[in-house]
Structure formats: structure tokens, C-alpha cells
Length: 149
Image (tube, rainbow, N blue to C red):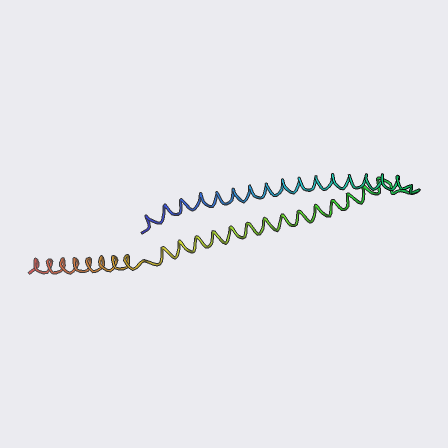
């Protein structure tokens, strides 16, 4: 029984390593995606800032908002968006890690249950083996007693 269990442990380790590598890859992809989104948002906000400045100047506004003021507001908005995205990515990564942990625990539980619970045919085999062993022991005892006599 112990001999059968050892190879299973060897196959579990590469599976865990694969899961960890997949999680790392997913995390890196999420980070790249976040960076791209943040960059695009910053570009869009800068375009809006310039457009707002040009619109105010074209409308003849004597006091159009300064570009530095608009850029500051855009930077603050970008920082808020970046923080929100980072929090969402962290939550997604934590959820993925938790799901992987639950899946690994379920696999381990199944394997443990499979090891501890024998199928009816295996139970029968074990009972037959035990009976045969008992019969052999009884025969050996009888033979030993007969030889002593």
C-alpha cells in the first residue's frame, strides 16, 4: 500500500508547481494590462485637458483654466483610477489564489478519501487474503503439532 502512495506524491508536486506558475503568469498579465490601461487613460486625460483649454480660449473666456491646473486635476484623477485598478487587480489575484487553494484542497481530499475508502472488490480481496493467511497459519500449526507428536 505504501509503495502505491509514493508515486502519487511525486505527481502532486509538479501539478502544484504548474498551478503556481499559471498564477504567476496570470498575475503578470493583469499587471501589464493595468499598466496599459493606466497609460491610455493618462493620454486620454491629457487630450481632454488640452481640448478644454483650447475650447475655453476659442470661446473667448478671458480667464481660461491654466494648463498646469488642468494637468494637476487630470493627474489626481489618473491616480485615483490607478489606485482603483490596483485594488481590483489585487482582489482578482487573491480570488484566483483562493480558488486554486480550494481546488488543490479538494483534490487532496479526494485522493485521501480514495486511499482510505476501499472499493467493494478490494474489500473482498482483502478479506479473502486474510482468510487464506489464517487458513495457512492453522495448517502450519497443525503440521507443527503433528510433527511434534
